[in-house]
Picture (cartoon, rainbow, N blue to C red):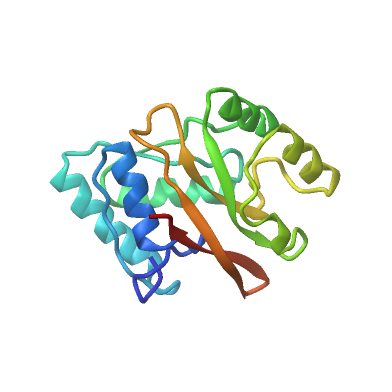
Amino acid sequence: MNEYGDRSRSHGIPKEVLEAQAKALELPIHFFNSTWEAYEANYIKNLKQLSQTFSLSHAVFGDIDIDSHRIWEEKVSHAANLEAVLPLWQGNRRQLVLDMIEVGLEAVIVSCNQQMGPAFLGKTINGALIETLEAMGVDACGENGEFHTLVVNAPFFKNRIDIAIEGASVSSNYNFANLTLKV
């Protein structure tokens, strides 16, 4: 989470939305606040704590093919005596998204760069949107940092997460949806 503990660092997702996602997954969730400068040290500290609390042996990451991300994930995992697992590694980016859609995952764009613009916030990832993004030169997965998503429904969710977008904000050349839970 950011240094205030109210939003996730890269995605800008409010804590209560992440808690609702964990509840839908029927999994525990652990938060820690951090500045970017202290992020790695805090990440390792918390990863060590979680590995002891839950007797973990592995840490799973969703990166596909950016070597610097893999190197960092392996480094922090090793520092916490865990093995990094990257199940999507070297997969075809476009096909991974199509597979995700086919199995019933529903993900919405919650942040995106200025090339895409704020009009993409809240859009659900589907085949037509992938075509639009690729025509703009945007990676189908957003793997180059063009956009970030939130999964709001999946076959393994206990329930769908109903969110609302109440405007948007801009920070560091990035658009963020102001998300709330629908009640």
